[in-house]
Length: 314
Image (cartoon, rainbow, N blue to C red; front, side):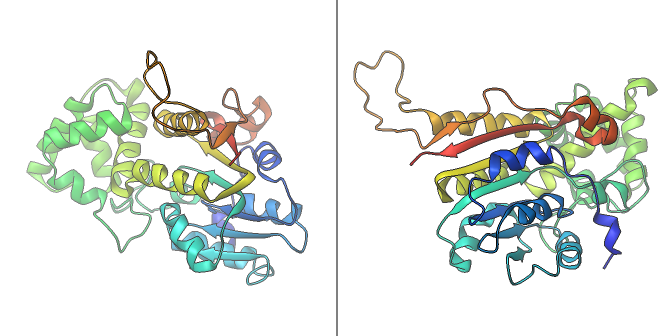
C-alpha cells in the first residue's frame, strides 16, 4: 500500500458540488468516485450523526488510502466499496440501501494515477496497463500490440477525438512490427513518429492516452450505466451531481439529464403523446458550471472540469 499522502489532491469544485448535492444533513449519500476522499471528507463534515456516505472506487489503492484517511468514520457514517460505480444498483441492494439523498460523480483519473508509475501518463516511463482494476479486462499494452490499425484508428477518433488518428495508428503498427510496445515511453515515441510537429505533441499524447484509458476501462459504458443507476436510486428531492473533464463525458451527462427531464419524446408532429414518458428529474444547472480563475491557478487540472446537476422529482 502507498503512503497516506500520495492520494491527496485538491477536490475540484468542492463548494459548488456539495452545495448542490446536500439537501439533508441526515441523508444517505454516495460518492461514486471516492478517489483521494476529498469530497467525501467534506460531505461527512456537513452531515450530522444520522447522515452517512457509501464510497465507490474501482482502484483498490484509492480505497486503501481512504480507509486510512477516514478511518474514524469507517463502519459508522462511512462504508467503502472496491467496485466501479456502474454497479451502484447491485451494491445498494446488497447494503440494504433503497435510495440516496444525493450521488456525486467526480470523473476521470486521479492525480495519484497521473503522477505515479501506473501506466496512465506519458510523462513518466511505466508498464503500459491503464486498468483501474488490474485483475480485470485487457490492458492498454494488449490493445496497442494486438488491435488492427483500423481498430486503433476508431478508438483514437471516437474516444480521443484525435485528428491524426489514422496516422498515429499506422505509426504504432510500424513500431510494434520491430518490437512490441511495452511501456508508456515506447508508446510516446510511436505517437511522436507519426509526425505533426513537436508543438502539438503534448495534446496528441493526451488524446491518445485518454482514448486508450477509456477503451481499457469501458468508461463511457460504465458512466451511462452508473448515471442511470444513480437517477433511479435518487429519492424525490435527491440530487445527482457530476463533474466531468472531457467532452465525451459531459455530452453523456447532458443528454441523459435532458432525456430524464423530458415529459414527452414523441416526434414533433405526433398529434397526441403515445410514448407515455414523464419527466423524472429537473435540471439544476442551465449551463455547466466551471471552476473560477483562482481555483484553476491553484489546481491546473481543474481547468477542463464541468459540473452538471439534476434533482429527482418522482
